[in-house]
Length: 72
Image (cartoon, rainbow, N blue to C red; front, side, top):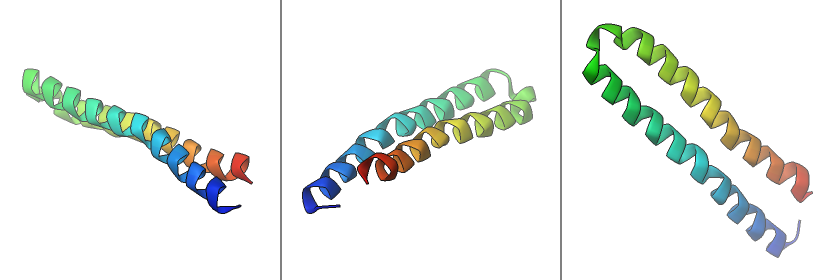
């Protein structure tokens, strides 16, 4: 990989990380809101939050792997 391709791959991954970052922030915010509204189901909400975060972060990892696959 040449120098300019590496810079473009880095920029591409940075852009790919924006979506999951925003997604995790929204998930956390909505979980706090839901817990404030119904504190008795916070365990159920926590499980759903962690599952949602895992799926959202998987998108970031796919973007990272795509940089290696298509950048080679």
